[in-house]
Length: 332
Image 1 (cartoon, rainbow, N blue to C red):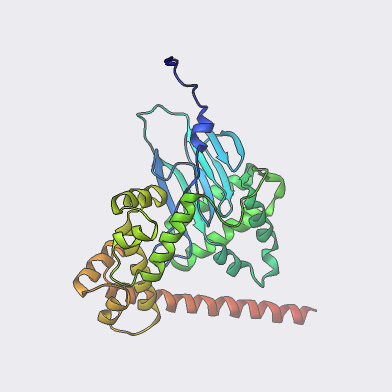
Image 2: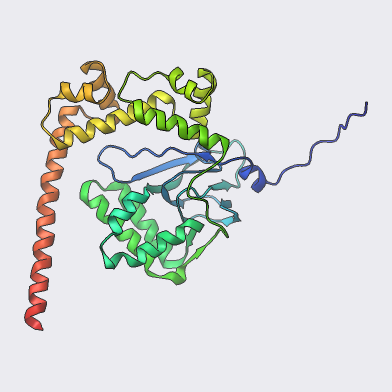
């Protein structure tokens, strides 16, 4: 028997960083958020070859290296700003030593297709943004003043709250869409509408089952059985694919439902506790405070205050718009 003792051929960093099916990230927006803003270090469990159904605007704040967007492989430098569309795999690999950790390398926003459609439907002024979102299916890199404007707005969004946060997002998207000469598409092909790898199909089954049963007394072995996996193996698989452990993911869904119920009506905290899938108010209060940083009662008061302030702001905007239309009619 002849044994080949020669070392296997080394894979290029690009091939290693894109080998296998892309992991599927599960994006969870926080309470009172229409889109997700985040920063993270590098290396990070989400800094890998992955994709998700959401759009993502991704800023690399420091280091250089190689980026993989769909079938595109190319260099990136600090300030690299890229918009990826739904299910387009992506990864940024920094050229750093193995034992180095880069704080806050990445800053990003993620938002769903339905959120984008809600903003764009019925407004002729959003035509340029709709064009940009269509191009994002191939990945879009911004340059020049457009990239700098996007970077500034992205930083401001991280400091903003409530309606101001949404307004900054709209301003940012308008800035990014304004000048087509300062952006380029990256990948030669766009992904299919859905992913069809074994891992993604298995994860889809798990998430669909969780979505249908998270208000029940849901246990990890039940979900594992849906995927034909042992509980321990499924736990590792779910963490690797989504970046979250099972209990954290379920708790986030329950807290989000509780936030919706607290903001929309006058039901008691106890009623909302059970309707959100919790078995006792003590655990509900503890988990809710852990996620939101305040008690359910305090959240309700905050949500009501934001709603009142938003209503007042909307009335002012519409009043100013009406006056502008009237003045234009008089001038005409």
